[in-house]
Image (cartoon, rainbow, N blue to C red; front, top):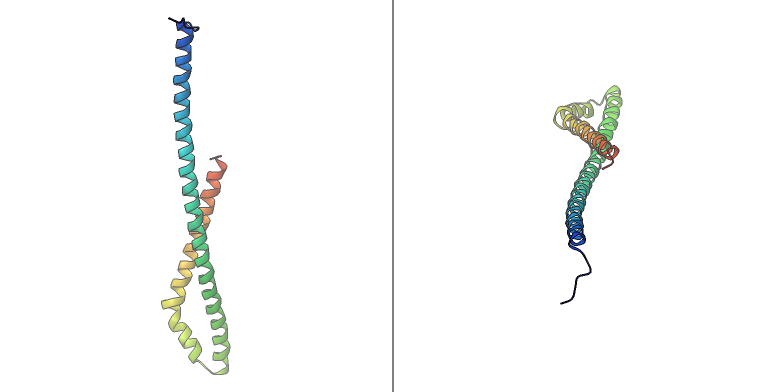
Length: 125
């Protein structure tokens, strides 16, 4: 037969290198998968934050409408037309206060998401 050009020592070293390469490839694959999962989680967090911010825009408009209505009602009440302020006071605890609470909660959640997202970015991941 044909004589092998590699010694048994060289073959052992080659096999050890191939085994090491396979382990490193597996580790690289696991790290890449973890990075992909973290990227998906980050994208989900960004979409959630954007959705909440869109909702905050609407609640802000509701608060501006309530403020304008309140100022107008005070002026109308001063001129002798109390119906507007009475209706506003009726809606304050049932509509405007809950809307204000939702707006404040949304602001806190968006701020917390932004804080923790920036904190994660600082870690280098």
